[in-house]
Image 1: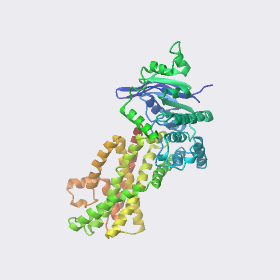
Image 2: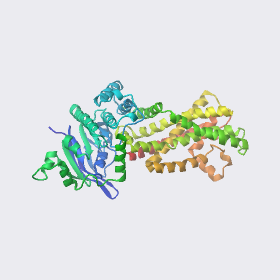
Image 3: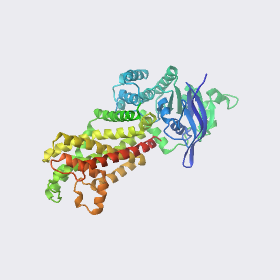
Image 4: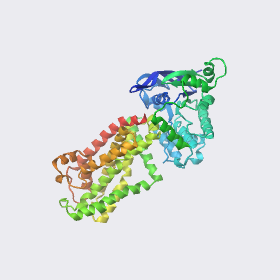
Length: 267
Length: 259
């Protein structure tokens, strides 16, 4: 049984002359791990920003957890969690404090706050480091803390923008383990962008490939591979076929700079 | 939940966690003390000796002590926007914007925390004033009034700084704009000379400058015998109204940093 939890319809965002997202329509279902792939500048981050209510669409509509991003942004915010690409926890607070501030902002009842925070820290293996300043955390620990922070209020959908960028393979596996646990334990839908094809390959239930703001392909890994015709195809080939490019092209100075800074901070 | 209660509650949450950061790093409070010390000990003493400033029946050092307090509050608060840009370059601003927190609470909470932080400067200026023999008013109500005005002034100017940060968006541009703004605000005010010795055009500008009303309120409460130029009611009205307008503008502009 599938029920749609992210419904995007003709979503469009223009910046001046440039159309970053061009009539995008797709649906992600509850409990799904949904991967949005594309080269830099394909419109993935702009899409996530619209779905998380950071950016207003120029036209079109999307509903997240049943709420409209244009007319009910407040309700959308209560229903979602967000892990931006750049580091979003505060280095000058402890791990515990980073969660406590969001427990209060999300109106988690005072009596439950402490226990909920302890559970979250435990679930990402950070209990022992809860009292340390986040400045002293490693990259993998920072990402895990961000996931704990973004899911403290048990969101129905968790949006992640390049969740494993800058992490070494071991930290990457740990982050994925926690994400999959979340999905299994709470049925959280994971909607993420990535340009690590192996991440998409091993963890995403369905993959959408964006190219120049448009949806170029959508399906399970098997379906995408089969769509290229007979013979065995890798996701790399699928990607090059639909995105019409390798991963490295495109992207603005600011995109690249954010990504490099994030890598530096986490690495 | 009642929106007003929620707004006030969230404002305090934001302010509280900004202040918690101080517990982990005190150095900021010390660096804040240096500038007022230089202005009072060097500039103040030299000008007081020169006898060039006619400040009525109060000595020049007494006259500028509240002015230097206001100035040091302004100089620290005006660069508050750098933090905001820093938090935007990380993903912190985005994370707050995706939470169901009223935008005005985010803006006012941050401004208010800057207000509380600036109390350290009030303590430093009181210490220096004692050292220099300034005749201070120790009435507890007057002291309370000074603290409230300092917190409000820092809230006002740091919110102004946040608005600038929302416009310029990069640290480099912000540094330039910050420098350009502080000096005119400072010189076109009654901080280090009375407005009655100003040329007419400057006097008009100084009366439109919120810093003038901050200084007037501080001078009236801090000193033993300095009557207010505008009246405490007028001072508070200008400071509060400007702050409210800036918070409303900030609440509209802050989400642009999430893009």
